Length: 112
Figure 1 (cartoon, rainbow, N blue to C red):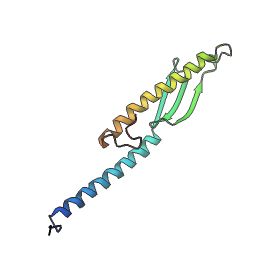
Figure 2: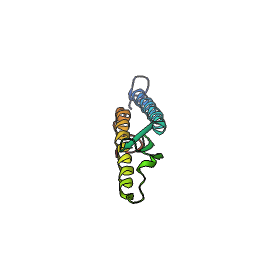
Figure 3: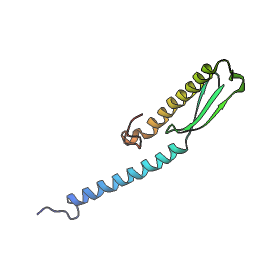
Figure 4: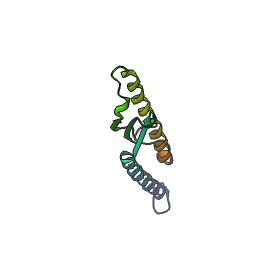
């Protein structure tokens, strides 16, 4: 019979399980931090500002009234999209930096 007592394979497995649990707890803490991290994307010299968290959840948009031209709605649409893309790029950088220690096993499945 295999020796699973002290110092046997059972002790190593228990240690491995503790390490995995600790890593999971750290990852959950980091996921919470990423939920709260504020990312600011901008376009047009801050004529359009988009606020989001590091998981790319947008929670606000500010538009300078001077860039609202009823005759050129396409320009405003382009500025909004550019600000979102800027925010996404910044969020990707933060997410990758903070989750890299977990080997890409973050809650977003490494899709970033």
